[in-house]
Amino acid sequence: KLAIALYLLLGWVAVVAIVPLVSSLPATTMILVGIGGALYSIGVVFYKWERLKFQNAIWHGFVTLAAGCHWAGIAYVMGRAAGA
Image (cartoon, rainbow, N blue to C red; front, side):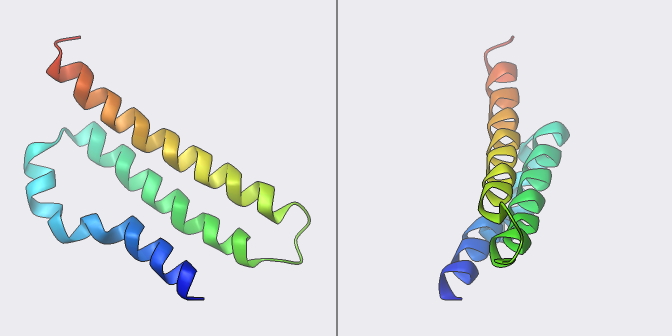
């Protein structure tokens, strides 16, 4: 239970700095980061649903999609910074 709480806390700790993030990052990046955070959080439901067949694979799917959203958000900012 503590591990899940820490997992969620770590994932949403950026909310503390939401004002400077919104003012300095493009909307596309903020949307992708928000979607990623939501996917990580929704994935916890499947992580805890131990009776569901393939629950671990489903959870890992959510983690992979969330990480992809975060990666895309970072890539978007880096592409803009490089003038791409």
